[in-house]
Image (cartoon, rainbow, N blue to C red):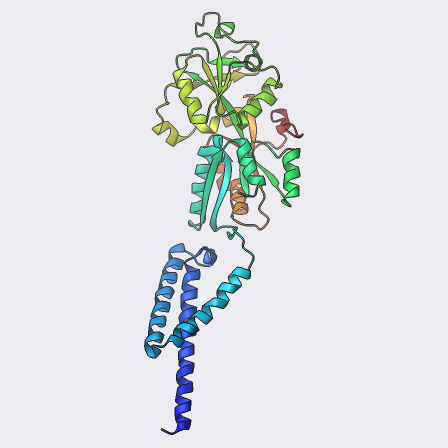
Length: 395
């Protein structure tokens, strides 16, 4: 073989070596991408994407090994490094975005008022199944104030709560160059629960107001035959939406409240305390206690019951009602509040997809089955301001 043929052979061998190296990196890169969230939404079902990612990755490793065996040279390792470094540099120069979800795929966190745990758990189960489990939603259940704080700090882009943002929060949103939209999705009854030992299960709205303001402090003031003593009103948390609703919409005063109002850590503690104290009234969102799984597993079942509430001070079975959707839509049950989705998603990601789901057929059906009144099918002339008059000032 003369020198010209030798040079040609060496050039061919070098070209083959470069080709093998490049293809090895390509197969490895494709495999890695398929195994990450970047490929979600392009391959269905998810199991196929993962299988393809494993196959490409293993074949890439095989190509690397085969190319190295052919040359057994430090030159091969150097070329692999040269091919990988530019791709890493591009990643570093690319602006990072922690929100890589799509409308119906990806992984996100949302924030939700703790009172709606049962509802949102059911909605998430239905939504994830609807997306063939391409979407994963991790809920954070907290107080109303904490939920809104997470939203305006952009820690989440969807929040479920019972009020819109106030002026101070809107100012913060504007300063952070965010835009928050509000969607009314449901109406929920606010329930009064008492110990089963308490026989006084009928109460009127004027009486509730007198209890909250301290005008009525003893059960004997409601029923002269009662020996239960002091009325203790229990809330789930001192920063909950229930307290805000009760103070602003029923008591209508923050200055002259009864000293017998108590706030605990969460709704589970509230239910437990009512089951222990015959003289207690617990005020809680109806959704929190209207759940089939809760009824099956809770030790509290059979230890407390709902109070029937009427609009008049003098009450009987005919003019009092329970916090059911049917009694809310007929405007018979007087204690109800609006449920909102607050959305700050600027890129039509998974937060937007979930909010769309909540407002349409399947999501609204889940709302109805959870004991709430769906907003989409509810009368649109219902005035939320009648019952939910949260001040728009800096509160």
